[in-house]
Image (cartoon, rainbow, N blue to C red; front, top):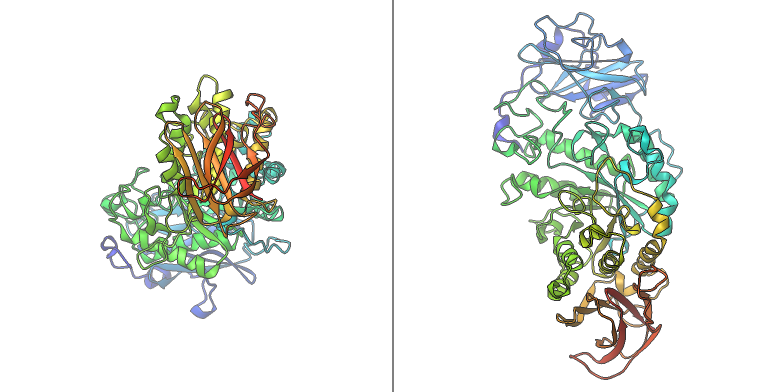
Length: 640
């Protein structure tokens, strides 16, 4: 597929390359396959796509950078002829591709391409496929993606119905030396792996790892999408992190950004010197479709080479880095200029192609969309679907946050809470549910405890209602996710330069324990709550005046499966509150979020450890039970 913006004829490359000595085998069958720097016997093969170039050289440590137009690894314009010292000229292969080989080049050496633009400029560029760069404005580094010792890693991630995600920003998760003016690294995350294991999560979602401009960033400004952020430790450190996470039973999800590139430190911009309307050139739309909230940097999803570039990137994370899943940033801006009407269908079809290939090639892995439009086709594998496995769900986060943040009990809408819990795209686990994510705790919003009580974010109301929201995250149908530090009541708002305060992990160890207990329930660790991994949910009771909502979760149903969640969104103690039950008989309280073991501020009301549901019909159900419902608390029971 191609867009009308790229109908310019490709320059003839044979004559241009003939003016220098090509360093590529004449027989295409003997050339290395793949893009960028590819290891071959005795050296390295280099391939790049530059359809408007009249010639391309590769230069680097292996030739003392002799081909650089200015002696520096950066763009330069000169009226002088090409440097006579260019030693490694690439051969035009047709269709805009160039290839050459450098005998003796090896892993660890730095390199760049020098593009001979049609207007006479010599343009120095980082390899778009570079697996490692010295920085976003530095050089590519030759790597061997096959050299890492995975030590037999053959990890299989949990299925979606048994997945619990911990979203993490590497630069702020744990900073052992906050005074060194550098972000934290993957090494530091490894130091806190025991915390994640104790908490019980079985997946970490890393905010974008691709090389970005500067050292401090959320990561949603990718400069080099194939290179792992050098400040975090680079590609080998990410492989080590994945291997270690897998050894602890933790899957790794990588956040990728395909709705735009850059916008700064972007060597892809006018890569081979060509552009239209003074826009981005071969990798980007050069018309109205280029516009995004992050600049005129939307990739041209209609151009085959760009589609392949993005497809190859997605497959790289799963293949070369053993990642277990991908989370796509803001997918509405892939299918639409303004996240509204679908006016870029090529972005939709690209997502479908990548996701379908992942389903076929890595059937145990998964892709997640940050879509937030409640569009069921996002997770459909039908002809008009984008084939994601799951999507972040705005139907859950907004009403649940509203319910726990509202200061006035009378302002809570229990109908909206019910709708948030029971919403479905058809498969209960095709949605990711949460009350905190990097977006929800920044950009004008803050952490839930801060939103509840900015004057006392560690106090009674903040603790009670934030954990009530968490209880619904872990008991509602969907894939639960928490954001780093949520488990120890982190307040304020998220910033890429402010690391987590790990003293709070000790101060609020009871809240950490509550999160761990909820995660254990969600994963059916004790074999008593299988229903939380099941597809089904049904309202048992909803009382808007009392602010009480109770629901039933189940998979197959029966003892050890049926779960009842009774949530009190009121600052009142209900000592005898009768609700319908799905079955008569014995039920055991598995978690009471008001228990004093979780916080000295909680009421510690005596909630019966066992409840007998009488075979007396109520509201259309076969049984009823009388519960104790503490204020701002959830009581979670399962059938004996």
